Image (cartoon, rainbow, N blue to C red):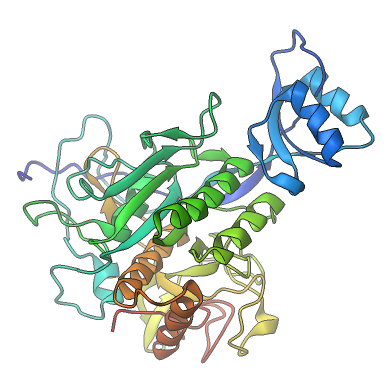
Length: 422
């Protein structure tokens, strides 16, 4: 990588998501151009009849199937009393803004990072002098996001799978994961950026891990929950097919619980995948944590700032909080924050080949995903449950006492604490 003039970016931190709801529907063709994504449930015989007319995007077996229909088809489905029709929810990336005087975009030229091992790497490695990271060999990290610029200098050669789940023509398109948003490339870099062939680029937590880049959100940062659920299940199936240890990293979500995503997370966890998800950016009020991070079988990650308070890093004000009624029990239940990690002013790879510094629990999540990959690579006989227990054990070693709701021990702001390499 040659050093050229650096044009840094205006920071729009694209992080946790808010839930929007689409409409959906079944019947004969119509002139209506409006289409809807729907989740259809009911007896097998009735679903089989409906499938003949509507077609299928995702078939979740006994749970139901999803498809895209027009207005007349939707009305026909609603008139079938033997079927239950639900509108498929759509998620979008939230935005947390950082300060920056410069701009990045399509005219930006290739630059060097301001720091090859940003503060998040120094913090999670517990080494302020670290210049190179290591680890993750033999582990796959599936990043479900806006795609990844897999030819970035600091990511090239790391992608083992590249798939798009957002296209209307097919639920899965292989060898396509283009990121025109930046969020997914940023997340991937924090997990496993390798510093480029010349060592002058940026480093992630586990640079020897392999990337499964799954595009589940469009370039605008939105995506249907059935596509996300389908991708989660696909990760689990691919883990089984390839005999791989896989960490599934999701820096996305919604304020409400989606049954398809919840079921998919349970499926993946049951298949041996470790699921890591952002807690959300809804602020320091109690029970603001988003889904799927709030699910019991997902490791919910809160965001830390590079600020010391009460002798520890501080939980960011924007970071969503869990349930205060479960403080101190060290037992993960639904709507509990589990672990904290650096998530404010995080520099990483960007979709145009440059670098960007953004904030959010979206940025904290890949720190934990990378750490999980690094730990697992040295303990390949472990199950995902054993790996999760080790993350919790390490988190307890560095209790977080800074920020609203953070206190000694397990709390609804920081969870068990900040898990680190050492």
